Picture (spheres, rainbow, N blue to C red):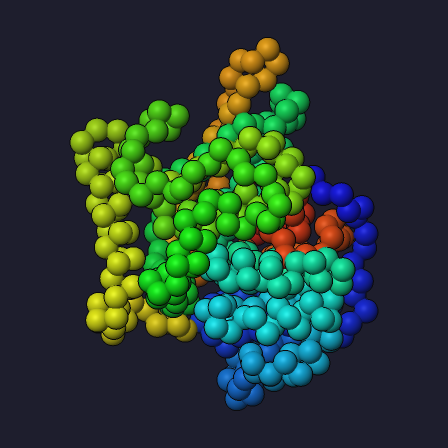
Length: 421
């Protein structure tokens, strides 16, 4: 669904991947995944951050997984040192970054990637940051051939690649794309990462004081090209509803505010391959009946209360002190391994003489979504950008546009389920 002809990856630089923020909680998990799954000589990985001592300690830990890891190169730089970032980005094909909040720490790194023609992937779910990077860098990244790919974790790969999978299946069966895709989050087990919480706090604070940020967060097409066509989707629902297609009560999904925008940007960047009137919805679902409605109502009220609390200084301080994880904190291995998420998707639309057709699918992960599964998704995104054939042009693009079927294959091989029923 892209115009670029596949071409072999240029691997002439010293490193395939620089893992930026390798010593943070999520960064360590990504490093462990990449070391555990790399074949001999398959991946030239470097660990990068601000502290040599911490990076050397991480390298020793990784050597327990693979003795060859003790030879991993270490690179030092600072998030605000443009010259150091330029020098580092010139050495690598891809930078994979876990250093957030990205609005605070990510802008110079993206700029360096554009200047050096280096591919980039991150974990951000920060719509204002992504919009800023699009406005500043999309055209220049396109000219440089730098693929700047945000949202390569639980935000927003299940939604973006899940929709891509469903549209492929619908078109194969019926010859046309589906008019609408819905994603229903059935169940999850796992907590917010400290980095995700920090990003949400940053966005809530900005929205409280900046009308433009509030406008952007309310715009369902906030990440589309400025001259793009607006589809049928309105603002995100905030209350309880009932969905006939899934046969259950619905409540807002906290990640929908970014996931939906990423899916719509994918459609726009692929010349509206899903259709100009394509609609996408995303929500949590609960069983029909009074108990299901009560659970949906509790989730909806809880989400509103949480966002209000993090936007207000006194309650935010109390939550950060006593409730919320700090950046760099997370669950132990047993808790990560016990986590999971399950999602169902529905693609439907008119075909032939106008009759409605529909197909269902599912996306599942068998580790904590914010940590274990996210480390796999980000690690495989970086590996895909670094090694696999190039199937997209440069720009500030989405996982689907950048990697599409190639990343689907990698994630399936890594144990995630992307399946059409």
